[in-house]
Image (spheres, rainbow, N blue to C red):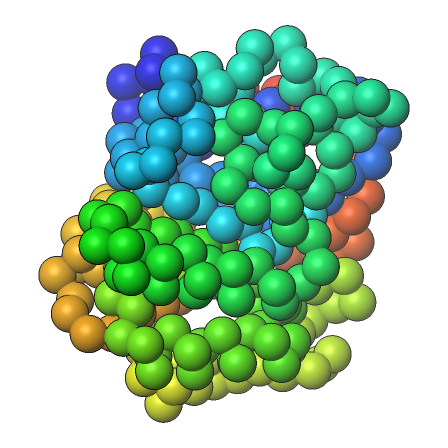
Length: 270
């Protein structure tokens, strides 16, 4: 990787998100930007993956349960060398392998096709249980959203993971407090998320989801937990890094125009 720090990697991911969405004229900037730091830390060496062998059986798995933030994942994969960086400009275009939601059959480095909210965590549970049954030492990670936490399937998966003591499963919850219709507390509050996950039998770690040292420390702690799945509850800012997008629900699924993209890139490059 050509970046000296994970913070530089995250900044590059954010720049690519803006460029991709401006080119595509569609997509989801808010959640992509809020998850960029989590994804940057994971793909800077925390995940055991190899761009030259994206399907290696012993690789760690990542399931992007909130599949609409695929631009952040695509940017990380391209910057890590899973596919050429110039392909990012084909996002959402007809015939491209970079569609609006991840496609495991077409995109190198994507472990699961996601997009229907709530389903990704169940798949991650299945992967983690399979590793246990096979005696494999790979770990499984998932990234979920707090709006997604309104889905009943999330909680069924939560019960499943605790019941089967999936301590090889670590989940990041990108807790930016906003969804397409506004504040999660007004739409359908899933709070208190920390108490609920503990009640479901998970080991819960609460961090600032933009603090790279905190993310790394949480990942290290997760590896020490035995007999429980781990939930890393990340306090984040939707649209993080772009002033006019931050904490604005309207940027959940609206792409920047050329002028807005130029302003966003100026801020990120500054």
